Amino acid sequence: MKVAYQGEAGAFSESAARRLLGADITGVPCHSFELMFAAVGAGEADCCVAPIENSLAGSIHRNYDLLLDSGLTIAGETSMRIVHNLIAPPDVPIESIRRVYSHPVALAQCTRFFTTRPQIEAMPVHDTAGGVRMVMDRRRDDEAAIASSAAAEIYGARVLLESIEDNAQNFTRFFVLAAPDRARDVITRDSARRWKTSIVFQLSNKPGALFRALGAFAIFEIDLTKIESRPIEGRPWEYAFYLDFAGKLDDANIARALDNLRELAEMVRVLGSYPTRW
Image 1 (tube, rainbow, N blue to C red):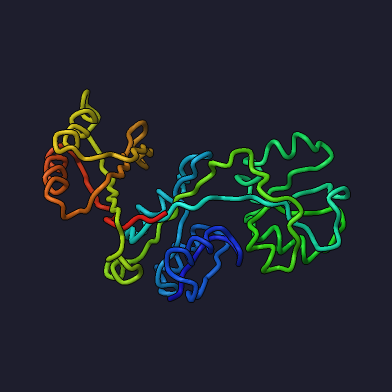
Image 2 (image 1 turned 60 degrees about the vertical axis):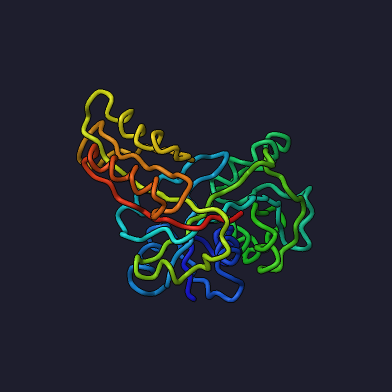
C-alpha cells in the first residue's frame, strides 16, 4: 500500500502511518499538506495520513480545509505521543551547538530548552525529519535538529538529549484518509473497540441555531468528543462546524440524530465513520 504523508522519511506522520497500516507500507513523502492530498487524488498514493490535532498546539486548520475540499473520507484514526529529541551528527558535542532546526510547532513545544540555552537559536524548517537530514548533509559542528528518534536512526545521527518537549502530555491525532470507495480497504476494522464519526455542517445565521443543532445529539445521548468552527469561504462571519462523536454511523441513535440535524442545517456532510486506536 502506498501511503502519502507530509515530511521526509522519519517524520512523525510516517510513524503514525506504520502504526495504523503496518510496517510494510510504501511511504510517499510530500513537501506540503497540499501535495499530500494531491498525491491521493492523482492515484500516486492509496491513502494519506494527516495530523489533525495536537493536544498542546490545537487543531491543524489547514488539514480541516483540505479534507473538506478533497472529497476524501476518514478511514481510521490514531493518537500518538510526540517525543522531541535533540539530534546532531555523531561527533558534535552539545556544547558547540548554536543553531537547532525543526518544524515551527516542534520548536514552540521546546521553549524551555531554548530559554535555558540562550546561545542556541531556533531555526524553522518545513519538517522535523527534514531538519535532521539537512544537519547530516551539512555536517557542521554547530548545528543540530529536533525530531523523532526514528529520524536519527534513518539518517545516521545521534540523539544528544531525549524528551526535551515542555510537556510530556504531547499527543497528536492522525487521520487515515482515502477515497470513499477505498476507505474500508485501507485499515483493519474488525478488532477496533472504539468507533467515532466526524461530520461538518452549516447553519443559517439565526439566534439559537447552534443550540438546536447540538440538541439533536443530546436528545439521543451521543457523546460529543470535539466541536470546531471554521470560516465559510465567501460568507464573512459565518462558520461551518466540524463535529466528532462516539459511535458508528449505522447506530440507530446516531442515524436519528443526523436526520434531526438535516432538518435544521443548510448542509450536513459525513466526513467518515471509523475505528480509533491508541
